Amino acid sequence: MIIVMKPDYDEDDLLRIVRRLEDMSLRAHISKGEQRTIVGAIGDERILAEIPMESFPGVERVLPVLKPYKLVSRDFKPENTVVSVDGLDIGGPRVQVIAGPCAVESREVLEEIAESLLPAGVHFLRGGAFKPRTSPYAFQGWGEKALEFLAAVREKTGMKVVTELMDPRDIELLYKYADIIQIGTRNMQNFRLLTEVGNIDKPVILKRGLCATIKEFLMSAEYIMAQGNEKVILCERGIRTFETETRNTLDISAVPLLKLLTHLPVIVDPSHAVGRVDLVPAVSRAAVAAGADGLLVEVHVRPEEAMSDGPQSLRPQPFLSMIEECRRVAEAVGRSL
Ligand code: PEP
Ligand code: MN
Image 1 (cartoon, rainbow, N blue to C red):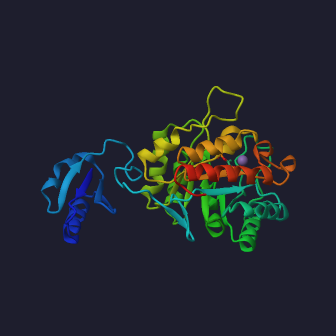
Image 2 (cartoon, rainbow, N blue to C red):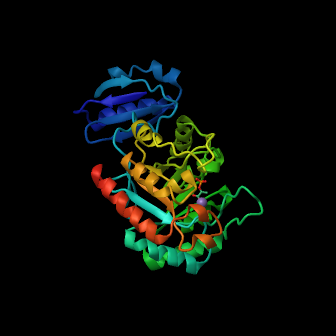
């Protein structure tokens, strides 16, 4: 249930509502926007229906929420959520770029890649320390050693670190090293993992599952937010279809759709979406045009030597050109990059 407050309500009105909801073992989520204050009431709908919320002082109107997700819904919070990492905003007017190798390979190569990204104005460095690989015989990532390399490169370049968490047992380790924790496609419905990242105060990039519907994707984001962590960034990275020419099929409509349904920032990973370097620039331009708040791109100085995802990793020069093109698209749609 959504309780819309009158423009001239006072704090006592709000307090009275919150107390009443809590007395009934319901949760109140307050969103104070520029235009309106909204109280989202979460809990058993039958109990909610019994409270004559319209009669409370300061209440303008009461609306039912028919969607299964609440906290992530734009009905609950009409304003865009901006996730800020040391003053760098994701979800604000500027389209942010997160780039780097699929996996952290060595400190030297990571540093070379990071330095190649700086001329493009990239502030976020990605790199896997724990890699979810289809084959148990494939390179699985260097674990903590890789996290140390990421931290060392952050120290040197000032870039923020984005890296994937696969196992709740590694959460303390990642908390120490990462600026943003990534939950990968294969773990989008690992509810235990979602609950764990919901309990910490680090931003989380949640990638859409291989075969997840938009509703399932949003319910997973709800798991994180229900624990209290509101710094959730959604990432569309392609879904599985019958098409085999591309690694996945980018659901471009997911971008404007998610922006309509939720207040959370939405970014696009063009690299895993198409799986081939020749398509990454066009798909990135499309993502920015569709309203994405950021791009997550795989870049490598020598893709032929990459330990994973070389065929979809851009070299620095084409990456720089692509960013220039995306900047022009961003400006055309009223954003900066
Ligand atoms: C990745 O970003 O390296 C990755 C493994 O992505 P996804 O979870 O989208 O496959
Ligand atoms: Mn990859």
